[in-house]
Length: 75
Image (cartoon, rainbow, N blue to C red; front, side, top):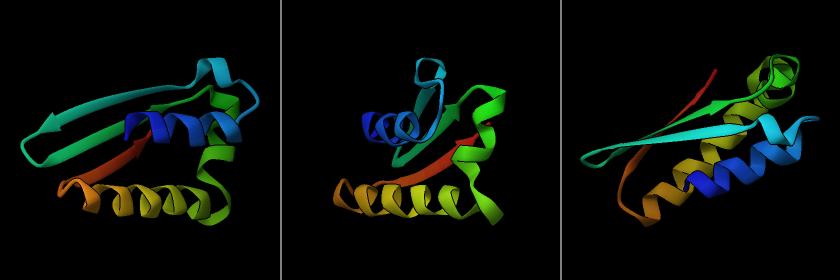
């Protein structure tokens, strides 16, 4: 799942080399923290958070296949 989020984030930003995704697993919960360059933060979040919400929806769908709960944190 980490690779999927990283691929999505790198395709959205101008500086793909500065995209970093951290994955923390705690039981059946996975927390994915996306770190991007400050100037690319708006591109990952989108207008009114639409892109961030879409990323969360895609990851939630992927998480149901693995029977885990996923939390996507952008910061």
